Image (tube, helix red, strand yellow):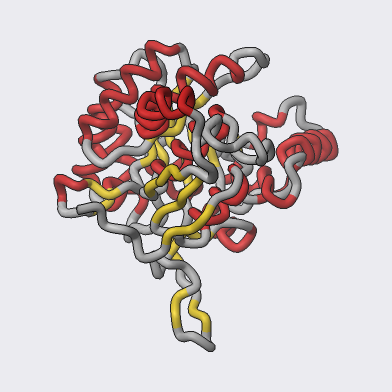
Length: 317
């Protein structure tokens, strides 16, 4: 029998679906596009639904499809195929719908993947490599169902296992994203480097928790969640520095709390060869451009010929 989730949130459009997932819904329900939606053109398009399903599935949430109005006979005949297509959204949907649009632009495509078993990572790497992405970023903060739900990124041997699987099934460079929720991140870094990783990215979010003092319930339905934003920058800088010292020569993509050029410069001085901007984009989508320009200004002010000269330039006491 179908078990209805404890918290099933409505998602009238893609933005609301993302909010529902981020704020702890066990699952979301949304109207199937093209079926009974003639009076609500602002809802999901087929492409948006596919994107929404990918987004929810990547975060361990289910998506239920509903009908707002009675479908026509022609719509009813097409419904089973449409439901199967939506349910199958994932790496195949990304390759079919998202990658062609990205390829219209002059940019490198780095595909981030997560999985429940090493075999899932291998399958995704094969498909994405064949599809022509430029690099694959392997998220090892996911629970390993074969190891009792223990996250890959918390044990060197598990991190090495999934890294080896990804490398053996990929024809493009593999970058492994490290979790900060460990005792010694350098142990994990060495393990994935020995397993063949071409680059490292760090840090992922820090595990945190907030509680509503009135209801005494955690703010997030999952009780704990990932903390990102400016508060994590000092942790990111420290861990990038430690990892760059532990595995010298292995390229590092630094991330965590970057909102301006000086933030990015700190990560580069600590050892990062490149920097990513995430959470800040929710407040200002142009943040990456501003960070880039800020880095240029800083490099010029210090008489540097290239921003790359910042990498590894820290002078520890």
